Image 1 (cartoon, rainbow, N blue to C red):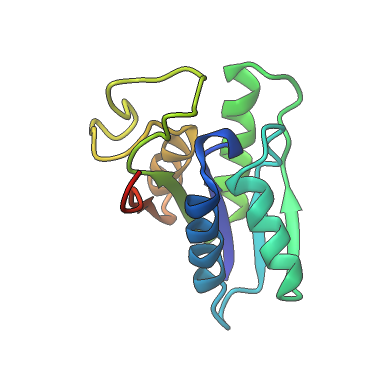
Image 2: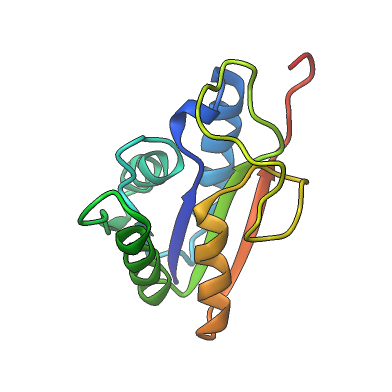
Length: 146
């Protein structure tokens, strides 16, 4: 199975939530996973960690970086990820850390929920499902004390 793994950028994570995300990624790399596909996000985070963990497990990887940093190109990249994957997972956070200084939204408008932080990866999961693939949005909970 080719597993697409996408999600939040590095700045949205603390050391604790990065550790949790990496553990989650490792748990997804079951014996039936033959390759990992991701988006080569220039901001790091899930896209990069997924490739790092896959390579550490001896899996082949494919990255689809956007040609330019605008929605038109992110959308095309996200479509490539979904189309190249059998199953797509988006890893997001329940809440942003207080240190985060980027754009924020009251809800994930892709999912219509405030149960997790907005991510373009959620759009990728929705698109994967539209084209007959499977997908999940997995939420990293806020650690105790923060």
